[in-house]
Image (cartoon, rainbow, N blue to C red; front, side):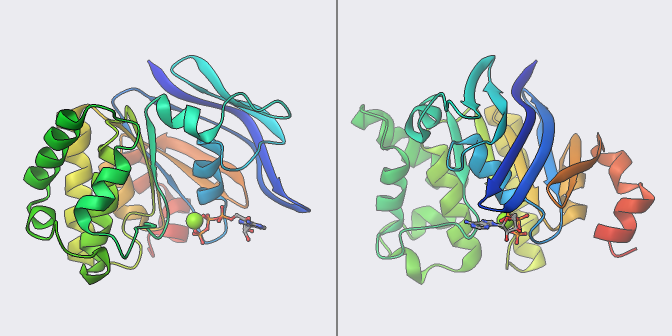
Length: 242
Ligand SMILES: Nc1ncnc2c1ncn2[C@@H]1O[C@H](COP(=O)(O)OP(=O)(O)OP(=O)(O)O)[C@@H](O)[C@H]1O
Ligand SMILES: [Mg+2]
């Protein structure tokens, strides 16, 4: 079943058209990736899903409900997040002066039940042991990879059905990126969280995904199974350095 359906959306920043007539679907339980170069419109698409940028055309539906609509926006970002969609933004946006634990608490801002918050934090420390070790430390003292893990853990504190990841590998060493993608796979398989991620690291993203989309200049130019895109000549030339 489709959990996310993006239907012919366009987004503009003033005169700059960032997305043109973009349609795509994400099936429940899948990992789907969107690959594209700098400035192609990847972040704009993720931000549009959670209502952070308005649509000039088209609609976005989550679990059969229209959440975003051009001209007459349906829901606020808060309301969209309450539908259990969590975004890990590009560059992580961690609260650097807060401890790891305080950051995780922020991720649970919608959860009223304190016992449930404690239980989820314990699960996160179990899943990312380094966060447990560092839980009383200020976030700025963490490495880039640890901060990315924390940003993912913070998003998971809201128990999302759909996890949106904006370049989880950005600026990190290859082994760290591998580690993060392994975690993403486990989150998807064991916690049944649907994942939609955007990446410039096309190889790892497509290997991890069942389905992928390629975006160029705000338009979807290719859509296929991850393994087929990995073998696609155009993708290899433009994104895999082949
Ligand atoms: N707030 C903004 N105001 C004006 N133009 C913007 C804004 N944000 C993005 N753009 C422009 O919209 C286009 C798409 O940007 P976007 O950030 O979505 O691309 P991206 O694929 O995420 O790129 P990157 O790989 O660098 O993160 C680019 O031309 C960018 O310059
Ligand atoms: Mg971006």
